[in-house]
Length: 137
View 1 (cartoon, rainbow, N blue to C red):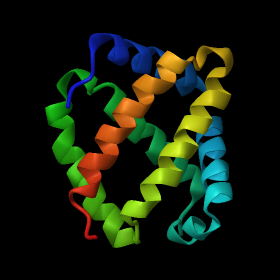
View 2 (view 1 turned 90 degrees about the vertical axis):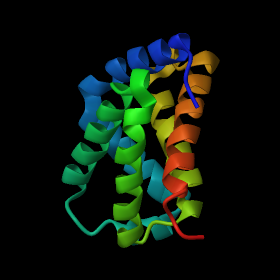
View 3 (view 1 turned 180 degrees about the vertical axis):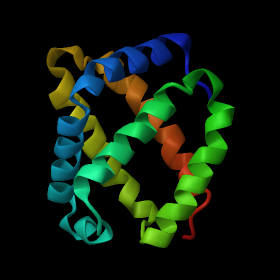
């Protein structure tokens, strides 16, 4: 899978707008995620501020690897293996992706256009599909 140069630009530009409020965005993400699926809260045993920093760092790395998605694949595969050890399941990707899209919608406001949303959906499908391949059914 590859993203178009326009999708890469939309994702990068929109992430750059959200990154200055990274910790607030992470709070919005986890609040939304746990409202979508309260059972997921049990998977997070550590400091949620630290977890939020890890989330934003991973998103930063992913966004800045969009020109070379093939290099992102092994990173996502390892991430999937770690998440399986934490209790993550393939079914968790739907609420996670929806929570991230909602976070972007809140963080970007009017700048979260249908075109920006579609670019992020394409990226999230790539990430989820890559990670799911490393997870048991």
